[in-house]
Image 1 (cartoon, rainbow, N blue to C red):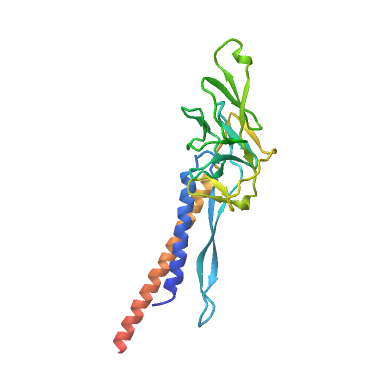
Image 2 (image 1 turned 90 degrees about the horizontal axis):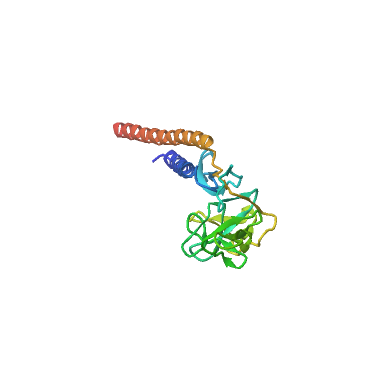
Length: 249
């Protein structure tokens, strides 16, 4: 069988994987704090007899885009957006510290401060717990305060309940998990960074550019069709060669 089939097959496979990555980005174009990912590939020359005119396509890596998404003011006290570089520390399902940019926070029946996906938000001493029947505010430095709703002089009783841990580890040291959270490559918790600031009562949208993603999807579809056409051409050539050999035999 012609070697063209194998080289075209490798190209078609990687184009298909790229399409899956772009589809993942498009599916999360409205996800709060989502970071786009990009499948990067490289060509590897085919070694062996004959001229070095062919190359396989191999999966090199999956890169993450860390550019900031658009900020939208919501007016909701538990909504926060990280301004510039930085992350909100949370506790993953495995108990390890992880990081997210999704700042649409909420509280559960026990008063625990959680992300929209249910991950506990970490403070300086662990997960943050808040008292019931209180108005809550989050400052730019991550300080979470509560104000009692009832009682004499309640409005003037401001209590500090904790401070959200904000970190800014090197971007090349972060790895995306299957749960959508990022973790340090070695699993060591990042150090809190005083320079990371929040935008209170605001949310950061996905940094996926939907127009670019759609154009990329169309381009990949054309590339996939081209690789499949090459497979069909190689198969047709092989069939024709077989017929000629059969006739001359």
